[in-house]
Amino acid sequence: MLQNKCFADSLQAQEAIRRAILNYNTLRPHASCDYFTPEQAHRMKGELGRKWSPSKKREMRKVQPNVE
Image (cartoon, rainbow, N blue to C red):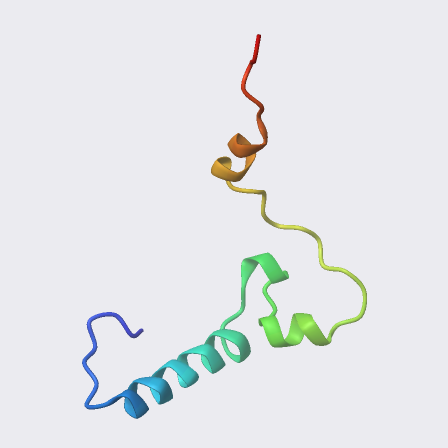
């Protein structure tokens, strides 16, 4: 949405970022939130099912080297 955009000044850029974040959190459903928007999911009671798994990099960091 904001890639390759040029802005006249920092205020214009900040407003574009604010709108992008608002759209992301209030208009766009997310698979990881059972296809609710993050705002809807945040307001819900209970837990959503986990739809993601940790990244491979994070999992690899947990492995300890074999020290002899």
